[in-house]
Length: 247
Image (tube, rainbow, N blue to C red):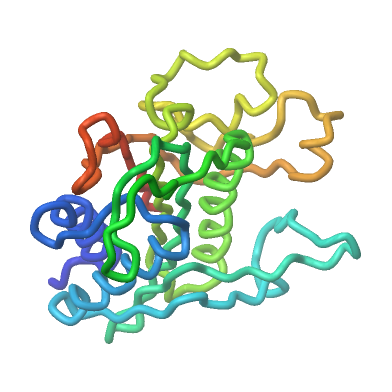
């Protein structure tokens, strides 16, 4: 029996992070999220030829067709458009939506090539901050893929991928976050288990709760972070990690 599509794609994503440093020669310190998505798309396209799947980027999903509650609306009360970063599909008409997040903290200036020319003291990464919104966005992606899976019978599973060098996301263990912080329900601590959890802000009268609505997850998930070495950078900067959930 052919291995499920989601397992093939997830294994290739893991392979990407394992191979990119030495074998592939990529630098994991992407300057922005789009660069990361394009690099991963390029890699998965090549692997997909061997593992029998193809990819589509920026896949539009009609939100008015979704089953279940879709709480994200614009200021006119109309459901927000949904675009999935990547969608893998195979010749058995199975689909796997993939959502990707890349959140960074700044690092000291580095020397690098710009259009093939060596340049010194380049500030490649910025401090994105707003970690509470980064966490919210991660779980929002999980919920969106749950809704897609529930609505479209050819969607086998989905993948949510989060890459970061910000320790606020990836170095704290479960139990290390103050239960009184407003974003507590959205934490991404190592070992956190989710089982049909209500995802909402601690202070329901806060501006965050008004702008970013809560939601309920259907599935069971465990947060696990995997370290990745940043290729061709000092050891002090080899502090990237990724979390990948199969939805």
